[in-house]
Image (cartoon, rainbow, N blue to C red; front, side):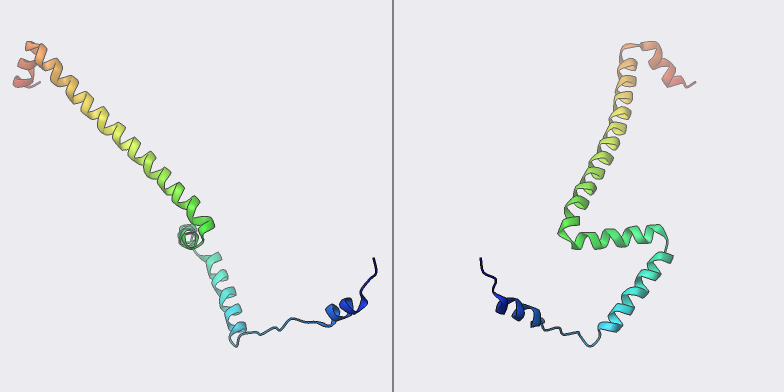
Length: 111
């Protein structure tokens, strides 16, 4: 294969047009100030900010939504187990009272 020197020379001389916005420097310093401020804030503020920013990015929104759903399902399961346990205890007491006349009499008299 023969090298094409004219293409190589053309590529060496080509520079892409680069336009810097007017407020580029101030935006950079603003971002630096925000990051410095974030280092000084409490961890829960940073965690909340991270979560809020995560919802904006689809790459992070899907895992965050999945984690939130998982936490909600676990909390619902725990709450339903507690409620079910209380209900079964109440039903057991009612059943015992319905078949044991002495327990029923004691409940009416008090301890």
